[in-house]
Image (cartoon, rainbow over all chains, first blue to last red; front, side, top):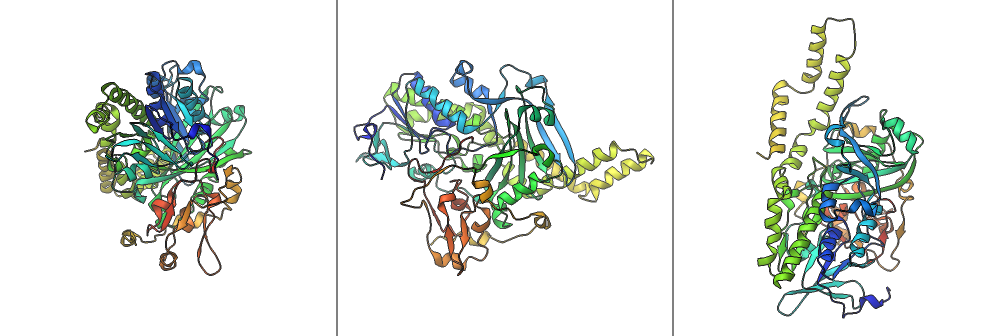
Amino acid sequence: MIKKTASMNHQLSFDAVVVGAGLAGCATAITMAKEGLKVAIVERGQRPGSKNYFGGALYTHAIAEILPDYMEWKPPFERAVTEAGFWFLSQNGLTKMTVQGGYLDKAPADAFITLRSKFDVWWADQAQRLGAFLIPKTTVVDLLRGNDGRVQGIKTDREDGVIHSPIVIICEGVNNLLTQRVGLISHDLEPSRVALGIKQLISLPADIINSRFGLQSEAHGLAVSVLGDVSLGLPGMGFVYTGKNNLSIGLGVNLDVLAEYRLKPYEVLKRYLEHPIIKPLIKDGQLLEYGAHLIPEGGWTDLPVLQTNGVLVAGDAAAMVNALHWEGTNMAMVAGRIAGETAVLAHTKNDFTSKTLSEYSRRLEDEFLLKDLRQYRGFSKFLETHPQFMDVYPSFMNDAMGLWFSAFGKPKKQLFKEIFQSLTKRRSVFHAAADMISMAKAVMGW
Amino acid sequence: MVMKKRDRFEAKRTGKQDDLFPVYVDDFLMTLKYYVDEEESHLWIKDFKICHSCEYKPCLYFCPAGVYSRDSDGTIQIAFQSCVECGCCRVGCPYDNIGWKLPRGGFGVAYKFG
């Protein structure tokens, strides 16, 4: 039994309570604390970040909008993203399409490769530095409501663990049980609209990473999505992110695919790590950590009602993810910030009904966030119905590039014919053209 | 009992599955730190009869921590101690037959790097 602590007596009362000390939760807490609100952040993990696992980068625009002087507080970033793009993997080949310099050559960088269990601790530290109160090791089980049904705070799993507050900001993450309980969304997640992300974090000396990935120094980092022979030709994508002295390498596969094909995700991961092109990149590396996390790729389809009387919801709990662009962390931070600003407004007006709180949705409409989610609403479905983008086209690209740059002592006309045939033997010209149109539609939201 | 997903579930196969070779997931999981709740499991089977009638038992496969297994008479066993709380089983069980709640505060997986 967990002992009751002094901080958890039932007199506890705050101006706002945040459920979850992740990217959205601390963003909203920082925003409110800066404006002088008395804020509690309730986190179920041992520490912030202990339940979070991702392969990826965080976007600095979102951090700077919340904490303009964030760099002075030394965020625990791994490396700046100085090279980004796609890798197209065939059975035994790799075609790279990455960009460096140009738009990516900024200081501070547009994005930093990060490990969440370290970053989230720092992110929560910033909230605490500004006056927010962190309550870890505490699971929120329900909202606290008065006799009139009005939200009065939260109930936690601690003995007498009730926290009073006129407004609750739910940033509980992908398993949005509280969001569902409150009735902000009537359906649970669907296997076809969630991806399971799994990765290995592999330890390697910085100079080895630099030489294997062609990076100039420890300040330079590579972030790539890997398409092709990663997920057995089924809807899914791999990724590689270079840390200071570690590699985040893994993949995301739709859950319905894992279920229907009865795939063990760690076997798919192992196959990817054993790929003849990938294997040398991780050679002699030590496994530091393995883990998995669900990604709510439903976006627009799984977007809940974003506010009700006394409640706002942000981040993964609201399926704020753009799968194609690997955006989600920035959406969580932007939504968290705007939720915080809305809560401040509600306090100014002393009105916590959805009338005032609907300012939150209205502001998100103005931002890129809801625009992008609406535009990409068909993308998950598109990948599911067009597995050739995981299989046919990456293999074709490798064949085409390989043939183009080989000298067989044959006339070039025949070479072009062979390149053309390497496509048509896999997919007819008609189908290929239709695929491209479908992709354009899915991306543009037509 | 909710059976709504049954109609949509059909097992498929791809030839590339033959490339897979067995992985002992505990080799991966030993890198993880857990605070195990010795008093209660946050995962449970709602109705064992449904598991017995479930033809494909995808939970034996999709769980990234290999939490689900079968004992000698085919009953589903849950090693909740290994759970990484991703939610796959909650969302992915075709019969909504897996009970899932968050571990009590402080318990469960604690990623060191993330």
